[in-house]
Length: 509
Image (cartoon, rainbow, N blue to C red; front, side, top):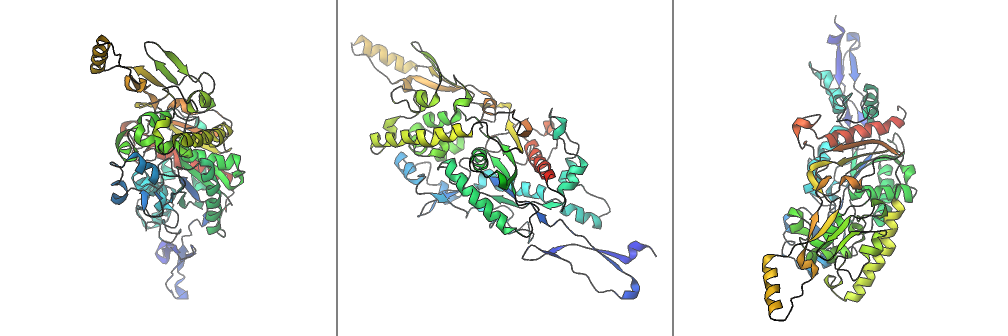
């Protein structure tokens, strides 16, 4: 008799506590039937995703404040500066975890529900489908089980990634068969740490520590190692690094994968303050300095995205008939961020609303005690197992530097001539006669290549790729003809592969 005719395979079943059992039908002893229980990996290494600025849902005591829902977003386009400042106040807002979740029931009982894992705190428009795809790729070991019931065998994503080189990356970053097989020994439940991005990243880092301890506590008897892996987007990378390197959190972290992190800060943070945000996001959060500056000036988090000393000099240029400057010459805080008189200063006191002198004093203290200290203390500090990808495409023009260029509209010139002829010169603010122009350099549309430090003993892998800043973790490739896989972005492949590389530190269970 063929042994296969007297053998049956049985899929694992997960109970409410995340334990595995099998349902095996009775067979008479004399039949010598062999029941093969397909044991899945049962040791857990939690992965925590940390969103970027504007990437977590917020609420106040009354209602939703920042969430991808009709009721939340409807209030923004016509909101006054006063209303925006009131609603987007870091002192009165908290994280809202009631947001939409893509494929909420997809993980069954293997892990706690996606709602329990914090997915509802992520801004759905930016991360809804991306989180689902990332979890699927990290949980593709189910394919190995199902292969026992198929005539044609399928590969897992990690097996597909084996031996594949993305662009001109180094050979050390390529995944081997042995590394992929080791990665299949573990389970990777994906959690989301939503945080109040208006508040200081240092405050958010404190809460991240609490969140990590809570996640580890959920799996205490299932853990392969008492550590987590952090996957971050943009500002989330700064929060993670501060917790790891400045708060002694490294002992709880196995490794980090950063996506489009503004490591050295980005001039785009200055542009937002002076001209508002661009595109659809700008229509919501504020498309002018009058609407957005009152919000950002009171919010340490967005201010901590400004270029620090390590970014270098001369990223703000002023060009007019009477002035030629490249700033900062030495200190961006004194020359730009705390400058109270020059028209190209970061913060305009008359746009702060309320008691302007009091507001300015609060802003000044914020820059000195929260922004500068955070940026400079974090400089060049990384977890020793750090992997990162960043945008480096000319198709996503970014602000490596900004230029205030004098451009007086014809109608203004005519008005000036008429007033001059009448003996009454027309004085206009330089903000009316100068346009802020982006350098249009390669990047991701927000963070330029010049904001990324790509060399450090702590960096285990780096990928320069074509990604949009907000959609950095989008599943689909920007250009299918140039991507390693037509159905997955290089950034997502790099992220999953980096997680597998990180777990090589963990012994087999």
